[in-house]
Length: 133
Length: 194
Image (cartoon, rainbow over the protein chains, first blue to last red):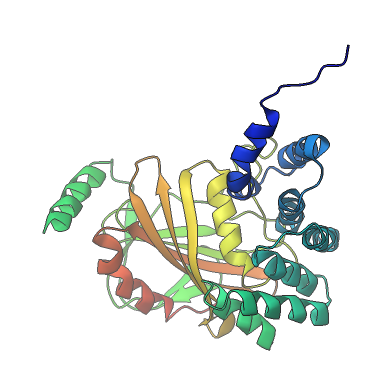
């Protein structure tokens, strides 16, 4: 007989969903690459790769920041956008990854989009300075 | 008035920790800060603590590190962390990476604090371009809470020079102390050279 699983899973996921980006961001800041990579894989195995999970995966790679990581991060941010992720920060972080991996034209497009969506952001002046360089 | 009374109680509480060995930094040129090419020209007296956050860091304070502290991180190279690493395998610290942008500097500080497990909250509030010692760099502000539940504010100036990170942070309790000594830090930061 197949195990139908815990009937509370769907309501649990729905309750967690609004808080998931904040939880994932806190995990990204712990600098535990292997731990969060595993956690994201486990979450994706049961619910699929949502925009939240793809963005967090991009952050994981970008913050480690090895040259190849930045290319990988850019791909995950792009995938997050395709999956419907709408937070303005995805454009900023995609732009920063492209800038660091030597793709200035794509970077400028993404950073400009971030400033258009969030002109009053706390880091807007720094992003504008990077755009001007 | 209430906040001043609270601040003074806080000062008494925090000043009760054992004093660390230190040496006086007299007004005037100070060179070789953090055993690096960092130099500054303070116009008031500071105390240099003998305890270091890492081999390439140096801490100055006015009244004790829990009430106000300036930390200089001098010439952190690619592959090196900001702080001394106690367990590289189980609790690795983030490192300076190649081609860092000015916006990566506050992220490095936040991740360093969080991955050492010392803060329950950490928020970067503003990031803006700044000239640091004649180099293009960044000024950023932040807030965090440690195990003592005191909210602290921070302001920092950083730049990447020849692939190495030079960062100076000023931190103090948000109530009373941060604002009281902020100008002294800004005066000091304005004289930085590397």
